[in-house]
Length: 100
Image (tube, rainbow, N blue to C red):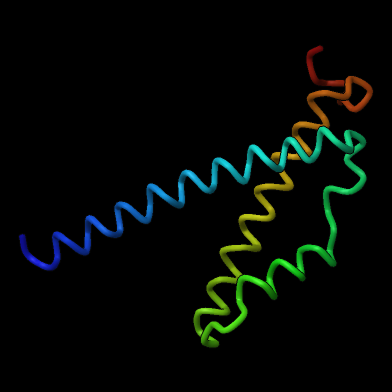
């Protein structure tokens, strides 16, 4: 087996791991929202800054920029899922044009 094939298999394995962790993160985010079902604490600027500092600690400047972009996007997706959970489970938050 040549080196390129081996490296592709390693990337495939990384992608599988990232997918599993992504799904786990999304599931945990909804569970956290259920603990505080009013949706008030979904966006926490200080917590997000803490996460960004943690995931970029020790990275080169180039990788820090890329990690920041990745994690900001991930946290935005997570918040979206959390808000959707709140809206879906709070009938009083339905918009007038939405079907019951």
